[in-house]
Length: 382
Image (cartoon, rainbow, N blue to C red; front, side, top):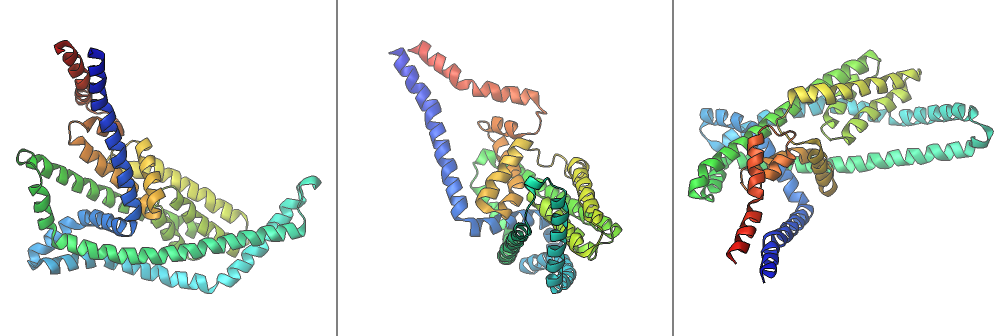
């Protein structure tokens, strides 16, 4: 009898919450996948709004009209971006006007390089001239396919960008109403704690995005200086493009360095220059990953590498590039929310990069044993 009752208690205390949590996770994943066109720009807008909220407050104190303050804040945000895009767009136009010559030059140099490497191979491993041509043509078709998909993705991202700006406008304009609504949904004794959580989330977003922006600026400068040193044409454009693409975790740095390397290979006679550029970008990436980003961004998110990679892979899988960019700050926001509730604080500690408060962690472990204590007490009462 006691064993049967204990099994019922265990089933009620462990299996049911576990099943409910798994079902909730699957439901959230399905909503995120189906709602990507709406949710991705909305989350970007929330992050940007948190970044520029203090600017909005300062402008609103001057204008006193919220829609004018919101519109002015957006203009302050996008004017530098539009100026940069305009300058880089002019150089991109020049590069595209030379695209036929670049493709022809790259194709000829690739054939020459492969033929030279093929001649140094053992006879049993050498390729025929037709096999070399087929190999190069297949590679060219793949590159053009990637470029076409990139252009279509760029058009989609531009539409999402303007939709994001619209969201930012309304979030800023009605920010006080949103804040009051969220606070009104909290229990009376927990409103102060809820306000602290919202402030902590806003500070984390602002610190992370401002730090990320500074890292991008530093990378643009370092990349441009290096390409100028090697004498690459349009060095500033390629350097800034590589710096901006570094926002995309893992993939962005590869694409950002591959483009100027390929351009240098097509336009410069010395084969060692592209090799030197590749070595320079490798050094810059190591410097950025091990010194620049840790010093500037530091522990503003405080999520350990395992959960950081997991969040980037998960959101990248369901949302593509946008998800890969949003994965890390979303993991930081989830960690802050988990840390505010007693029954989920241990999960927040698990996501942390290091345990800074051993006493708090011990308390969470003690609270996690609470159910076992109740179980044994129940058995004694029975």
